[in-house]
Length: 276
Image (cartoon, one colour):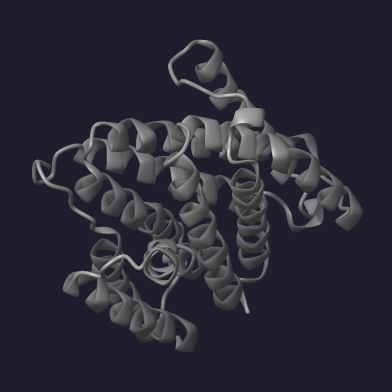
């Protein structure tokens, strides 16, 4: 069940990223991130309170730490992408967001089966191939450090949120979301990022992105509640494959042979991890 929920989180994140990319074609990426977060904060607050739970101060602080790590991931990801180095930034961020928590889990004593390791071995090239979208003029491995930093941020989110207690329910997601948006809002006010008003933004795209992102966070936390960090971190890292398929279906974007291979390897990896 944990791997299934991790896969669901990948699906939700992938569709949300597709919508975020569509929105970023019309306004700045920072605008999409900021307003999508503002839209989703009331939703996750109401949902978490309805689900209930007993969150300690420790759980709430860990949640805020997770959100801060996620914000760091967003900042460095967009900084790298803004320099036109998607071919290095996106794959590095996607791979490390799964491998970083996996490494922490293994060093903490978690054990994987042989099939799990097969899935991990296949997952890394699958994610790279799916998210590797080069553009003319890009320098090979240019901006790699941005991708690695973003992956550490996103992976840090998974590691931190996994440390919250089962009794806390979904309540840690509230300070996590607030911390993320606080960082983004401060950067916007400091004019590090240009942000348009909500009224001049593609509102339905932003609302959809916010709802899908927070739903992905819920699915990820539920997956971690019933599964292990090592397996869930990898299962939740296949969102680039979903984004690629969405672009193919809705925008008729051409799939490069490497992306087709990546999609095929994604299915193999998920099957191996689920069976393990």
